[in-house]
Image (cartoon, rainbow, N blue to C red; front, side, top):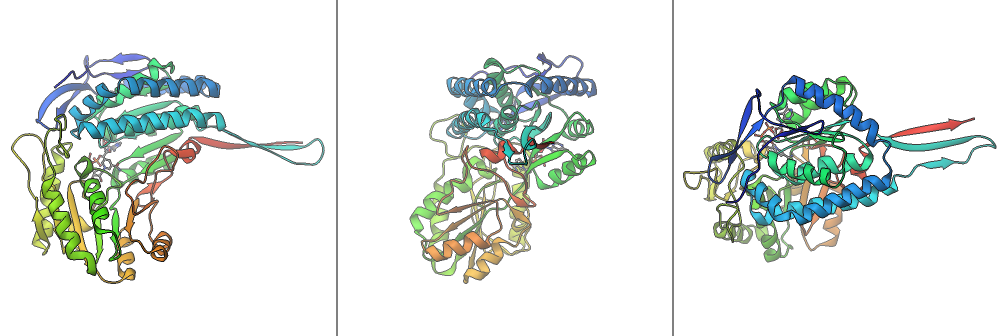
Length: 476
Ligand code: NAD
């Protein structure tokens, strides 16, 4: 199976081991077995991390763009060198396939390289004024960042939480998910090995609510960056508001997919089915609610079911596996409840709907159709391998269904009609829209949602701007 590293926190340059501290068992979701023990921070650890972050910020805000670029570029090169180890560790602790965790490494490589360039382009502007006067607009790093990364992209989420603040000249205290700590520590180590001063970025773990309330109560922290559920996001945004801290909130979604009669059926199915079941559906931008026009509906549903049944589910470390287990014991339980509720309310289940095997956290790729809108799964983010497929007749009704929920993260439309593409672009309320594609991310493009899916962006110049404040200086 390969080596799984000893787990520590990284505080003030020290690899902090368990000692007297509480610990958390890290479980391989493919087997249900414990593979590591993670030390959890106590209050003294968090205070030490805060003091260090203050020092780290004083140091890093005065770094040169060249120094920051060299660290990011160096870390990208090291991630590339260590790709197989990082990918294997991420699959062991999160479950997704090796093909997927390798892509996550490459996402980080691309993002760090992009920010290595972008940090050189933090420009201000100087304004024309009467003789002897001048107004200058400058940008400075916002300050120490408290960043919370979830388990669904064990490498990619920590990469996002670290890349932009480091490029901006901030310090960071990262609390990655306790379920996937070694991946986060692997990314941090690449940064250290590329020359990042250890006081600039640290890793703590703990009881999430205790860590976030402690860090956010400190005036040292000037920005909260959170990826996770809308419920937790709202709670943390309130804590951040107490001290008027800057926030970037990447929250849940319920990806609407509008499929019109004029779509290319095979291309659509070949693309969306794989993306629906990527990472066993545990992706915030996953295509989820399939809003399908009547004329193509029967063929779409039949093709979807065939493809879902053909997926090879198993241990993500094995060759040829297309979908791994769910990340933790809570997820298959949640899937069972969603399916039972939907069926009780009249939905049709075509395939899946149950766990696979009796070890690990596997749940079968599942297809439901004709699901009443009051079913829980049509209103709450499923975050699992459930495809929800309903028929509609008019464009107007399809757009209304896409906008029915308070979420607004990613949306997708499949149509060859150019006029319709423009209408959807205007009318569908999302932060990211894919037209005849599910490829909606890139290191140079902003990633983020609207409405209950959050605010602010990661990636792209916008992700860097979110870590900068604006200061205007007027000289008389
Ligand atoms: P959860 O809401 O308890 O946790 C989600 C993440 O937030 C975890 O990483 C957790 O450590 C963290 N978290 C929870 N409470 C926190 C707090 N008070 N302070 C700081 N961090 C906190 O749920 P879960 O069971 O781990 O995941 C289930 C749900 O979370 C899913 O249904 C999905 O909606 C959401 N989720 C979203 C994303 C995303 O990419 N947007 C990622 C993972 C989970």
